[in-house]
Amino acid sequence: MTSSESAISATATYVENYLDCVESLPDDMQRNISQMRELDLHYQERLKEIERLINSYFKEKEPAARRKCLIQIQRRLIRSQEYGDDKLQLVGNMMDLVDTRTRQIEVDVENLDTYRNDDMPPLLKPDVQPAILEEHHSKPEKTKRNRRQRNHDKHERDSEGRGGSSGAGGSEVVKPVKKKAKTNRKFHLEK
Image 1 (cartoon, helix red, strand yellow):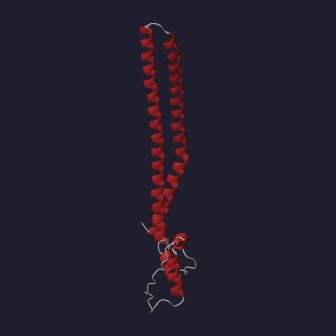
Image 2 (cartoon, rainbow, N blue to C red; image 1 turned 45 degrees about the horizontal axis):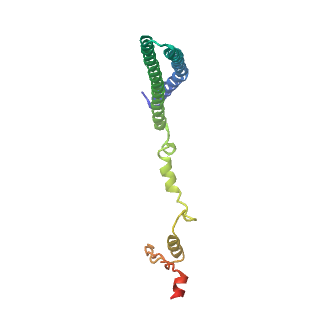
Image 3 (cartoon, rainbow, N blue to C red; image 1 turned 90 degrees about the vertical axis):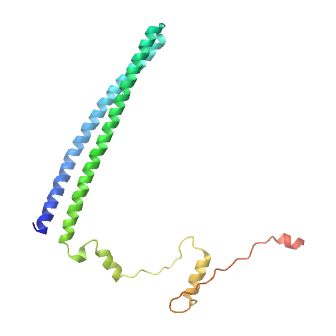
């Protein structure tokens, strides 16, 4: 198989998988969302039953009838919690579905780029271009100091710019200017 045939095959695979994803993913997601709505309806029904049982619990005077209401409330609460767990599982399935489709398309794009790069002349390949550009273009000199740079660094650059550096290497280090300590004028006048 030649490189152009491989590139065509990779392109065809990418297009097939992309179209499959675009066509089937919304249907799969819609199916999961419909199941979630159905679970939510059942959950809402259980909440209404629990509300009704709570009202009957407070109306009942006999301990046996109250105990029966509490048991029914407990069963409905357990069932409503199961509906919530099912909804969480559906959300996890939806995330996995999107993740799987995304990874599949990313792999296809990488394969497509690999074959595309094999067919390109060396100067047009994305990996080679930055290296070539760096060789031909020199970096512009800094014209402004970085923000929050100390003043003594500015003095260093100024002295280097005015011929303050010695030799060709410019390795002379300029010591920072020391500031005088602040003193209280009143203190000196009183003495």
